Length: 246
Image 1: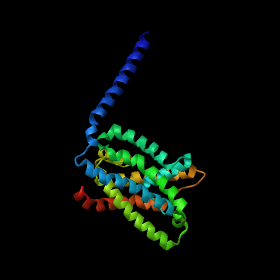
Image 2: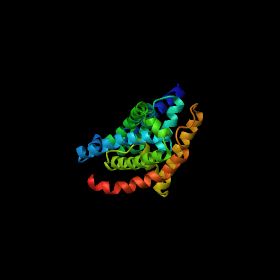
Image 3: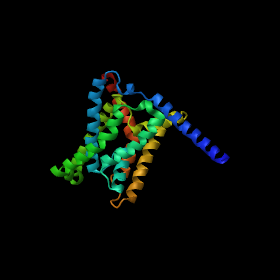
Image 4: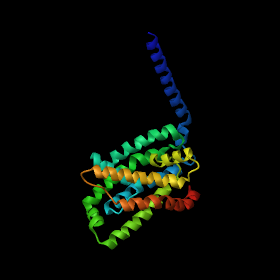
């Protein structure tokens, strides 16, 4: 009887700690953070930025020379589990969102949800369209000069779209929130080191998933690794003049 009461007491105490932790998390989270100042103006920048990111990533995927690390990871996970990219991104970013809610709920906003829900499905829709109008064939098997021109133009437009989305400041994507959280935990390590390590880890996960897939690795490993080093700094530079507009 004593052991039963002791076990019950410990279980009740653990449950209380869990509930208390949830309350602390919810105290940090407020619906007010969804409705930021200049909400309409910021939404008018953020939403097209997210949608265009999906369009441009779909083109990069078809060219096959590399994408951002998150897309590379998700493409290969989707190929392994035989899911659509949109569904895969909701699953992967949903898991990351749980982590973000617990340790960085103040970073969540409408932009967080738009990024995790819309981009993958936009990529799926665009790739379906590109395939049916022959654009996918041109991107994958066209002349080198055409592919290079489209690749450079698309990459530039993707960077601008990402900078617009980020500087709208309507919430951080779950993927982007995790390096911020880790940086707060490890203040002595420069943020760019944490971010690049995180991006390279995403590429590694993509490579492992691709190796497990019967379809092989989707996209270019080298291109995605290079983007791990380049995209963040370039988006930051491009985003500086946009802050004045937002």
